[in-house]
Image (cartoon, rainbow, N blue to C red):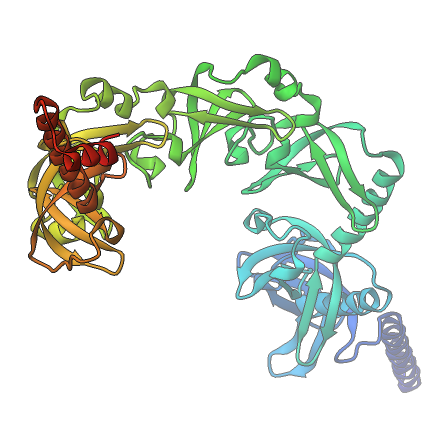
Length: 567
């Protein structure tokens, strides 16, 4: 080959090489032009090349491959190889090469979605992850939000722990990227939905309708029943005609019930229902069935401060007032006599069907202790007892357990005032008395101490009745009367008009007078000195007259005296 040929060959070779280099540059330029322009902070599409236990390799179309931790997919499914994912370019030229993040890409997208949802008030879906102080943490997909307990449910009594791990619909209450803060509410979309259901409910139902429902929650005062997406109150008094203390006695959560709507207020949304109105009223024939003085058997259902409620039949109760629980114990506590569930015999005292009241008595079916005591101790019987209480008007003697008799001051002594004698007695002292009377209805026994001995007035009147001449000692002189002690336990009254004008009376003076009047009921004896003197004078004249009559020739003076004084 000539030198010319060599030169030509060299030129061709260089030309070919230059053309190849030009083609490669063009290919490189075309390749770069076909790839997306990537800048830090941008979100681009990437393809999962491989998934390992701890990391995921993603091709984002650049010279290098990006690697992210498997934790980047927390809260979202981990993609399979070949799956397209969104990634955020964090750095393209760092020491560690390409720095990308899947989680930050998702978060940015979620933030955008949340901002739109906050603006238009739209509903989003989240998952309640855990309970935190004051509320719950909700996963919104790569972002966590706080849901206050007050915004969790429309029912403040709902069991919120059942919501953990469940998906729910919420709306955004407040949103802030820096500092990151998201507050959501499950209650508001629930309330909006319930309002629609409630509105539709009130449009189709009315008071008096019979409805089916399910017991949702029990409370002390009743039960809340779900009647088709709307809660209604079933008050404890509307469950049954029978009195119950708590709804759980007849209902349980989840139980199906049939009831009647008795109240419905569309403005407040409150609904009241009743099971009782669908039942037969047991009081309808109470007036005919229960009569005064009937003896019945019932069951103690409630103990009250003032008495006991006794069930006579389901739905019909009568009350035993505590004053009707015992003959002897006055201020009695019902719990000391009966307990709930006891079966007792009672007597009907009165029936008021209109007021749904039946008055019962426990003591009326027992023996009356006052009647029994009187039968054993009739009036006039001497009895023994113990002084229990001393008062200003007398004292009480305990005769039997729960039975006391009263000794009034007027029945202490025949001779002295009761106020003078009562000081001789003390509590606990054993005494003897006479039964003066028993008032069974008023539950009172009257006793007397002085009646244990004979009445000195009776003894006196037996031997010295009216017109008798008695002797006595004056112990008090008043303006119009003098008081005379005639014998032990017996005093008499001597009016001044019955005393001769020329006679002056003094205390301690012994006199002789005539009984001119007696009043046993008032215990009064009236004396007269004038009458005694007049009678004595008459007796003397009568005796003198008798002597004249026996004289065959009486003197003229004797005859005149006889005519004047003895006619």
